[in-house]
Image (cartoon, rainbow, N blue to C red; front, side, top):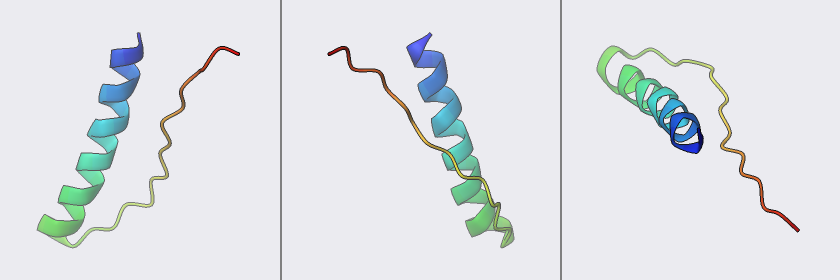
Length: 39
């Protein structure tokens, strides 16, 4: 489950970076990677 979330985060981040570089498109996607640390 955790790996799926990380892949989803990375894919959105990479898509945003490459679209901006290749096509001059700036996507306004704010993504955050959240992790749970037990106390």
